[in-house]
Amino acid sequence: MTPAQIRIRDAANELAEAIAAYNEEGMVDFVTGLDEIPGALAIVAAGVRRLAQRSAEEQPLHPGVVEAIEQVATGQANLAMSSMLLGHLARVLHAEDLERLFRRLPNGHKWDHTYNQL
Image 1 (spheres, rainbow, N blue to C red):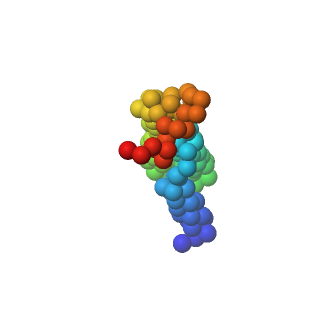
Image 2: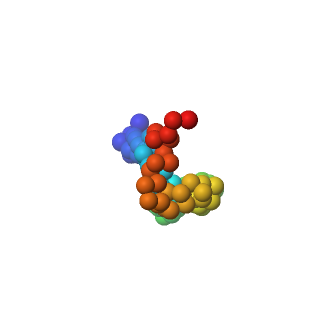
Image 3: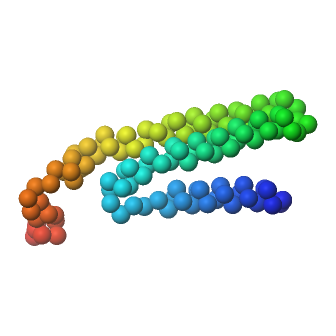
C-alpha cells in the first residue's frame, strides 16, 4: 500500500472507532452528541466529492469512473442527511426522560432508586 492509501484507511478506522466507542456518561450529552454524526459523515462526502473533481481535472480517467466516484459522494451525502434525524429521534422518543431531567423538583434526587428501598 502507498502512504496515501494507508492514510485513507487509517483515517477511516479512526472515525469508525470514534463513532463505535461513543459513550457519554450523561444522557443529555449522549443525545446531543448524536448531532455530530451527520457532520462527520458530511465531511467524508465532501472529501469524496473533491476526489471526483480533482480526478476529473488531473487524472486520465474515463468519465464513467469519475461519475462513479461522484455517485459514491452523493450516497455518502445522503447517508449524512439521513443521520440528521438521530438526535431529533432520540429527543422525541425520550421526551419524558429529558423533561424529567430539566424539571428539577426541590430535593428531586430523592426519587432516585438508590434512595428508595423497593
